[in-house]
Length: 243
Image 1: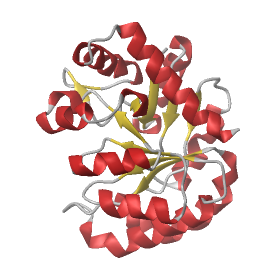
Image 2: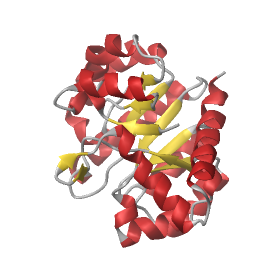
Image 3: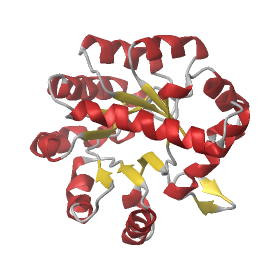
Image 4: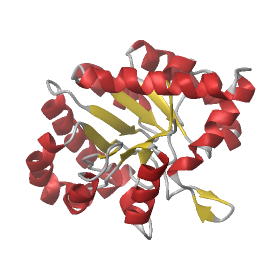
């Protein structure tokens, strides 16, 4: 069983084709959106699927749209158990909207504190701040998507009960490999982050998460099937908290 906990099906050239292929292959997918208006556009397509779910997002790099879109976020909050992509981005790309991002993310956390939701978190250059805010608002279920922060913070994230989603790009960089090596197998999930990553000059697909399974199998000296089974167990343990 393949599991993609973070991709953007709506951003592929042919989203319906990707969605249909995931359903045909039996891949479990959590598809992110960058804004609530994007969620509304895609929501109906996911009602026809059995294993693919759409998440309600307010991406930090779309901070200029947060004020005009926030009422749509509130309107749609109870339509899905998945919140993403949300978080903070204090890199050079996002630092100019830092205050808006913090305000928006804090409002989101306040809203979901007592709701059974799973958050997929964007944390680039803001990992410590993200962790502090998640703990402050007693968020129980969160996945750090494509974590690239300090290795020394990983233990604290694990102690707080959170997961990490790993994509094929991470297994091909020294920093990514170092980060993955520090994460216990029972806190790992797989993601593609498609279509933002490319394989052979083509956008990655959700089913390409098998590359991560193969990598973990080799580096942890486990069979592919054992790794696949563990990732499945991790995923079901996480979504089981929604019941």
